[in-house]
Length: 525
Length: 68
View: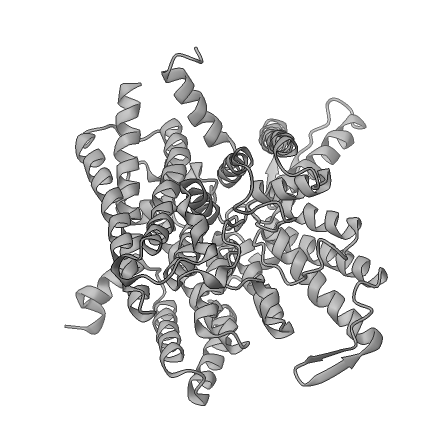
């Protein structure tokens, strides 16, 4: 066990060292926006993890390379600890403003929420897990450096702090493959895991720049475009405006964000192959096919619901690309605009909001459709949360396979088709079991979280509200029924922290970590 | 010494992928973002940005056409 602690300690140290670069990279924002009072806060946020990380790596320099168990424990503990360090800029900038240090401006009510360490950790973990639930009531009141920090941690968290660490700090054969797998991405692009994660970052950087320019061309100011491109592609959903994307009230911006969220929902190995000219992957890859099918069908269903229920019948005129629509055409246009956006936002686990009426005018059927998107998510190997479509595909096809086999003679030779793979009975059972376990655990923790919330939040919130909010947290989505906020009771905040954490890591690594800790303390023998 | 062997560019390339056109697209895109941030919505930058978006979006098709 001591050897394991050394390995985990050394690799956590490397992660902290990598993290310490992030506040330093944020320093130019203080210069551009004349917020130099935030420089000491960023420097402290960099020096502290760097010091601890260096101490750990030196102390455990000779530790053994990590195995699969270590990889899971490092992923789970690393994610949480990095989120704690990530809370430092929120906390320190808020306290700098509180005491008016270094010429800081007056503390706004929104920034004041981050004087609480728990709120700051909540914001940070929400960012690193790509959730997007927030303690910031009016995001536009935040200092630019904190707006940037929120977007930056979502961007980094989108592909993974651990992927970043393996990309920068790993050496060939250093066990980075194990770390990479435990972070819920098992599809590889290159034989070398180090080159794989570097390629993933390369693709991510290209798509980010592309997304920034798409949003800028659609009419967003450049600062807004930079932030929303980062959080949209990372399917995180933090916004720098008070009303999320609804603030712009622009159909063109809504439509421009759709491909960005979809890009974040497709597995990175597929992006790599498509960028190399293998366009057939867009329909040959099982997950990608299911992403397009799932998004298309459920979006159309949602549009049909909100149009048939006349949610936007009162829309008098809409102008889009110089064309003015009136009457039924305007209502249909608005239904398509809001319905497709909200479904893609939910299923990609982004959590951007354009329909302010989602929680008030939309029927329960429409809200349940959005919730299905949040729970299922999109492709494994992308930046999304949720159960993932590949598991839904496995469970659906696996159930049909089991039933079909009942009608066949016992001597019949069968195989289970999953995408391009033909699995024998044993392999099929393993795939089916894995999907079933994750799905089962997902719903167990959803129920536990909902139960705790029911006991702690204001009684005016109904069970559907609570289920929606906890599914949003655990699916790392960020759409809110209005429960999340700085006034939320502490047990509810802790519950959300736990659900966001397990949701990002797909539960198993967190359970392995908790079992390891309990075992070490002699609680679990 | 060739430009692609300069230390900074070499590090940039080593960190990145195995496609020099993608490398170039990233650099040009970052330059356009910087230009847009400093100069605003100048028609020339808007035009270049629109061209850039089309170039990135059609790049996979270009690679597909050139496949052996």
